[in-house]
Length: 249
Image 1 (cartoon, one colour):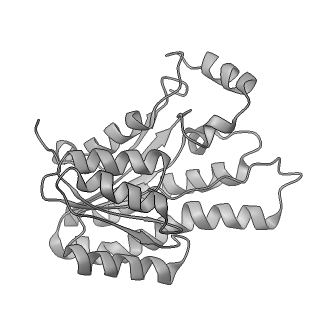
Image 2: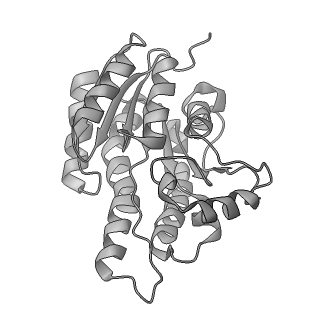
């Protein structure tokens, strides 16, 4: 098998579970050294370190709050000290606090915006100086189809994911001349621990609206992240690519 990320180093936020974990494993399978972070370093982190190391690459987990500007800068500095470089950044950290706007609290609005959107600003700002200096880098931001289409009961989440799209396109223009690329992935209905909690009736209705008649897997998203991180996409930047089985086209 050709290892598309051989010798590269990736930093992935929110990687203890779900999409982030699948991306970390996919990158390691393709030869990347993987630094990953989550709000806490726990048993999930230690397990993932072991799974990643089995691919004969360097792997290390960090406890870091992506919504903290200072914390994000500290994380990037620690990863560079431990790995000497960061070639790929995947901004994956995210949460939901769903409710109709009528019932949504200011606290839930602010929390979602800080974790989902401000974190992308924090990590990208902290990492750009290293990527500019080495004149190479791929930044992959995790948006969502609801950032494109909106969704009732998710005005905070939709706004944060829409903000990521605007940020992605702007950073692609700012850093393109330095050979630093920035793209976004917009997943649709993906099977994760979070979506597993959705009542079956709603799951069935959602899947029925998907032309491919199935939910996506975290591996579906990881495969696209691999492409965007690798040299296969060396002339692609400023793009938003959906992984949704045709739900939103």
